[in-house]
Image (cartoon, rainbow, N blue to C red; front, top):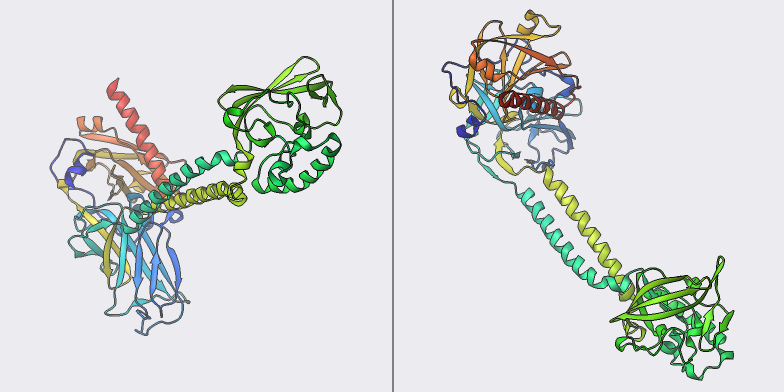
Length: 536
């Protein structure tokens, strides 16, 4: 612990006693320096006749046995009450809470402090029944066991040591949430792989290029026996029956019934066997890889015969499609080449996925819905992982199991002595714009240490020698304003007397988080300046 602390400070060690002293007055023992930024309480409305279990987002759990709370006369309270609870885990919260952080001649570095009390409906103070205890699993960011356990005696205005150490354990709730995140991520990956395998079945770029082709599959009609006069009647019947089927499979459908004619060229193919598939384009499920397929390309009763094939004469603005030709590229990939009256062409690349007769052997429900279900399950898994991650991020890594026999303020603290700190000693004078020396001497000051869990409170007297902890920020609160100073430690080490000028903070401080951001930003700025001056 000491080694860790020493890394924050200069190697220069000056002997002598710490000159910091607790700030106490005839007023309240707990003095909140900035009312607007006091650490807020959680308020829990509970039934004291039943077991009480309270849980915080950071992992803290509090358990109180039924009928354990009494009024000032010792009578068990059974009506609804309010449990108030708050925690303090860093130097900013402890400063703003006003709770003193000194034990005799030593300062305290917290690993977790909490305050708990109970009030009845009339806001009267309640008490824990004699012989009863409250179990507190206190969330903590620190795993060292060198943190004794203290209770604040507000009557004697001092901390009382309850035990010499508190053991930190891994927070099981955080570990469980992280395991859940990992499980959901693995599950999501598994689902994604399965869904990827299904994706080709449900891509929205699938197309069937003829409605009439279904007649062969549904009714086993031999189109070679159908005359031209019967085509439209058959197509109408097939359309009614097969649209329902195509919809049930969730497939795109493009209708051009003239593909049923068995001519020498069959419109789209020139004897191609599609690499083992059926030779008719209208019996294939196609995937559009590049370009588009548009229903306007197909089916127009005004068709012309050009000696060896029919041409669609569908109008597109001021030009007409003369025909569509399928050209084999490689494997099961083809080009659909459209020729227009103005000699222009357009190309769509498609790939044969399978025979409709094979596809229709599958259950339409599975064909249409499985992929959507997988996607929904993946999304659900993502949402769960996000929720678990968010909850886990708020949970502290450790807990300290504690038992208390009274409401009050309790603290797990490491006691900082002179040996723990390396500091520079100098005669220190302070300056703050708009504030007189007398006003400064009636004001409390804090050294905010770099570990962000320790602040050293002291009173200033002009011209005194002070032990100045290295790399620390000097801070004070006057009214509703905060002022800061980052000493030039290089100069302080070289001279016995130093004047430090504090700067007013422009930002409005309304929480410990606000104060933390201001101090961190201020520290970063001045450490960078210090580094630049040493470098150049």
